[in-house]
Image (cartoon, rainbow, N blue to C red):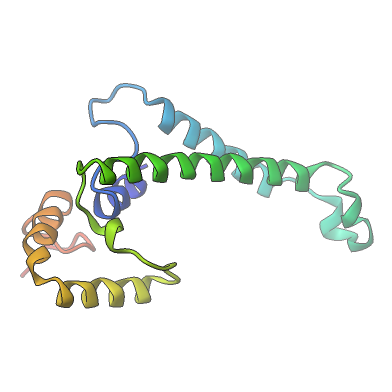
Length: 148
């Protein structure tokens, strides 16, 4: 949840799970449930993994369950993006996601893209610095190492 909230703060401009009050969050509970289900399914002994000729039969229903959880994750994330898009259109948010125009492949290309966007929009640097200071801390690097 911590990583999801950190990414949410940077990309969306708000926490995606909970408000920090410690109270139960239905969205966070649903996410935890889906992650747990995926972890359980990935650890199941699947006959099709050991006898490839039987894989297409999906004798234990593992593939069907994975497809079902995939649809749940897709609907879950779509809801978050749609809610965020509505807030941006209402002028409630001005954040990093607003500037994304294509899929982001890897961490290195994400960093390259972010630096390029900061070069193109230097006026956003104070906001980025403020968010980093708020999330990471003013005397820490994103790797949680003190600055010497």
